[in-house]
Length: 256
Image (cartoon, rainbow, N blue to C red; front, side, top):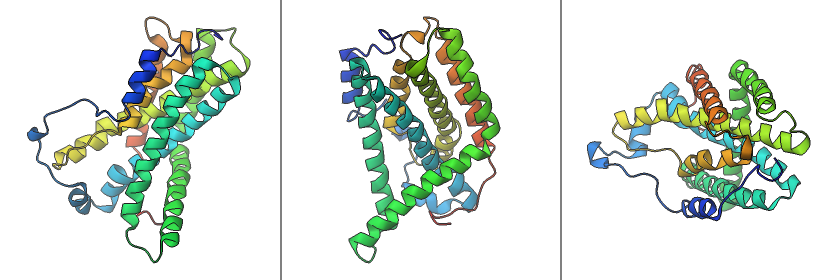
């Protein structure tokens, strides 16, 4: 495991890094009516705003919390291959958060003084993070079942793996499940609704690239048949189903 937990080739790292600025897959937008996001948002009821605008932002924040744990564990191991992989993922995380902050700044609009504006933005970011914990609590049955099952899957893949390497593998697998849950929910529920209303949308590019890069933390635990990754993706799909059944909350703005 020490030699093969992540063999991130120069080509992969280059591809991921260039992917920070290169658009994702193209599609013919002329097939859809084009309307602005602001126009569509004004049509949403409180419940729809929660499900199609606020909840995706909260889930994305939750994903990066899990990724941060992986990055911290990877740093502890001081392995060159991990450094390259972690550098790419930090770039993805930082770019995502910068874009998110710009959106929140636009939401806040003109405030009395820059200091007050920044203070409000920081409070809203913290609120999204806090709400992520409430989402975890709301789907704790599914989360607890899958996150506990991950330890058994890692043991089945390598019964001799232990210590920091095992902690890293478990954390990476958990991050894959949570990120896949967010991505599946977005693909199956959120994007379909936006497109139905005539507004072209797609998943955040950084999260699509995260989907490609996270499995490399599992290194040679990834069997040639892809059984482990497929099982983790199935868990993510089940998590997406649980998220989709959450009771909507009356949240129109980013305020309690």
